[in-house]
Length: 75
Image (cartoon, helix red, strand yellow):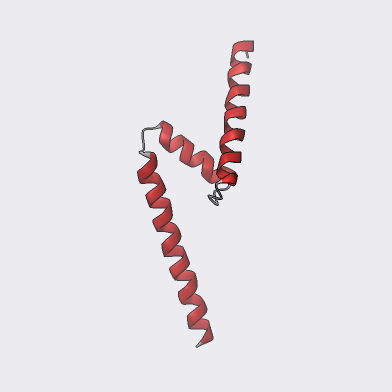
């Protein structure tokens, strides 16, 4: 690898670390793998607001299913 490529890789890692820290500070609940997927989707042109909406909706569905399982096991 050229030194320029090494610099780019280093900058990408640093940028990801900063995004991960911001994600943690904002308490998004995204792990590193999920954050990586979200970043890649945005790089491919997915609207960030739409992506955030979809993630929130998926979480709501998951919470409802978890709640329903708890209620059904208590019956």
